[in-house]
Each structure stands twice: as structure tokens, then as C-alpha cells.
Image (cartoon, rainbow, N blue to C red; front, side):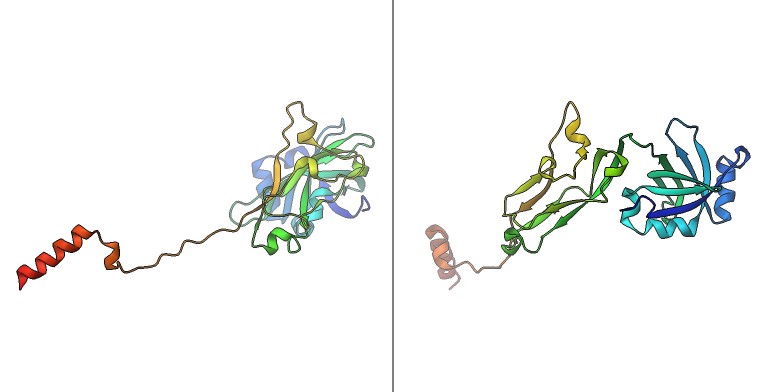
Length: 226
């Protein structure tokens, strides 16, 4: 995918337009405060039109692609690293972007797509596919950044599982958790046995199920009543 697939226009914010009060004023103007950092350069405070950012955020690929931020005519390659949303309404309140430096590796969380669920033998035998992750942190050069990682589960039987090390990675991409000194090759998806539902039924107690002593006592009571 082209590195300028996603492009946003931004405006440089001067020092007097920073802080909580200034951020509130920007939001009232339908602007989202943001910052660009990294790349051995000073952080740059910017603002982005909320409608442009909201439209971009609708696409999953926005979070795992190189972005082009045009700030007062200057194009900056970056990736989104953090997004703050309104806790109740969900609209973006602040965004953090990291500059891209050619030849310098980056850490990114990319989505994981599971394919072949319906074709899996385990699914056809009423098994339950349990996905334990939605994204995975990877390390790679910006030019090698994948939009997502794909895991084919079409061959999974009941009891099967996939770990991080089972993911087929594009060339030049490594998984951060597996590259650490205390690497943990955790499970990311498994096929569980079908759930057995317990059925409650009211069953009448037959005479043969009642102890003989209880039957004798019952018969004696009936005789006394007569």
C-alpha cells in the first residue's frame, strides 16, 4: 500500500494555543488538538479538522499505515500512536503521531484477521473458535509495515490452538513479544469443545426407587388411617 494512502491536513499550533483551555476552544471550532513527536526533532503541536479525522478513523487500516500529515504546506510521514476519545460520545479529543525516519524501525500494533472459521472441521463439529487477541505488536521498517496479519484457521480441529510463533510473518517483520529476552509464546486462538447444556427435568419417583423401609412405613400409616 502506498505510504500516502492516508493524508490529513493540519495546522501548526503556536505556544499560546496550547493547554487545556486552548484545547477546549479548538474543539469548539471543530478542531482536534494533536502532536507529532520523534525523529530527533522537537515535538510539533497541531490541530486537525474533526470531520477529516473521524472519516479516516472509520477505516481499520488507518491505524497500521504510514500517514501523510500536511502541516502548513510541509508533508510529514508519521504513524498514529495514541488516540483519546470522549468517554461517553466517542469522538476524538486528542491524537499522538510519531514521525517516520527512513531506515529506522518502528513498533506498531497491527490488527489480526482470522480466516476460514466456517470451513474449520472443529466449527463443523460444533466447536467454538475462541480468539484471544485482536492485534499484535510488531517491529519492522516503515517500508515493511503490513496492514494486518492473517491467520488461516480453516484446518483447526477441536483442541487445536495457534500461538504467536505460528503466525506467518511478511519478510522483515518480527513479533515484539517473541523478540524479548523473556519471550512468551502465548496462545492467540483455540478451538474449544462444544458447550453441553444441562437440561433440568422433573422426574416422578417410582416405587422401586424408594427404599423398602420407606415403603413399609407408608403402608403401615395407610393401615392405621383405616
